[in-house]
Amino acid sequence: MIIALVLYKRRKQKKPYPNNVTIHLEPDQELDNLRGLVGLANACYAISTLPNACETSRLPVFPRERLKLLSFLGSGAFGEVYSGTAVNILGDGTGETQVAIKTLKRGATDHEKAEFLKEAHLMSQFDHPNILKLLGVCLLNEPQYILLELMEGGDLRSFLREARAKPGQCPLLSASDLLHISLDVSKGCMYLEKLHFVHRDLAARNCLVTVKEYDSRDRTVKIGDFGLARDIYKNDYYRKKGEGLLPVRWMPPESLNDGVFTTASDVWSFGVLLWEIMSFGKQPYPAYSNVEVLHFVNSGGRLQSPKNCPYDLYDLMLKCWHKEPSKRPSFHYVQDCLEQLRESPLNCHYSPDSTAGAINHAFQDSDEAYCKEDEDGSILEGLTQVYNSEGLNYLMVQMDRSVLEEEEHYLSGSSATESS
Image (cartoon, rainbow, N blue to C red):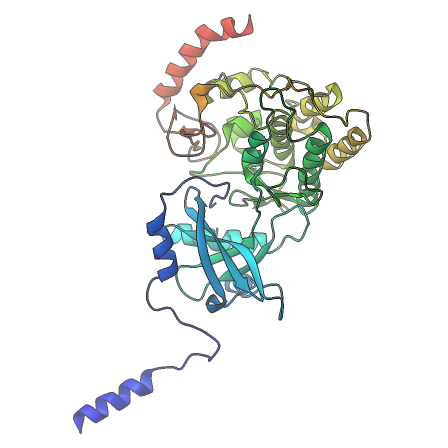
């Protein structure tokens, strides 16, 4: 009698779930299997604060049982990306659609999970052909997933590097192709500018290409990775506080020195992205360390024109790199300039000997440095390198001014040599 009463109470306490929902009580087995098959590499995706319940409820929730993970694509600082298929994610009757599936790494903190949701909420607000589209989210239980368009061409930096000229051959991308790529990115940037969003990490590694084929007329380049993006509609600038990752080689002086990010700082970064495109994915400032880049930019130094880059296009880059943020062009102006250049006679293939140049082997992709700001976000104090898998693109700032003083002493002796 007692046993029967206990069983009755237990059954009564259980709350039935809707019939159309699958509850995964154990860790996702598909994900565990895929994690066991691969060693994590880098990807252009990277994890970047917390949407409220109302904002979360507006996210396009997708049933986990209609999602299948297929293969590992790569990982960023906190997240992993897999390819997979989603049934009817584009609407009833649309069948299977290939998707990119983004999730957090094992052991993610509550803060990282909150930021993961924030990124999903942020991307759900965008609808533009040159912005990576959020297709859905799986939030019912862990692991949580963000479902994105699958971009078969991969990240733009790798796409550009693979297109470089081989001995005795032309590059796989013409000058016209490079301008079309630049225009695609500028259109996405102009859309973000209209919405008062600052991306803060515009770079070729964070843009994606829809197709693998270099001769395809259906190629579109889209801006991705909104882990660092912020809405600044209520403020004219965003001043970052606490710790965070900052892409030093793509940053203007006001961001490097004061942690100030505006649309004008995105324009600067776009100028560097243009330089990457015209140099077929070359590393910006290849002969400089990250610390040297910081001092070089602050002292007025700028990237030289890529080989075979039209003067008018390099002049646009220089406008993007004006020291005064207010004097940099808008993205509307940038797009107009690129449209005019597209109609100019420069639409021809490069000669067989026209290459982007080799990347300095001291700055290979196996190293990456990060940058933190100090507590009030006002000045960079102490610089050190931290290594992982994305290239020397970032610096980490420590609360130790002696390191910076040592770097300044070293650079003061070398800057005269550089300038001569």
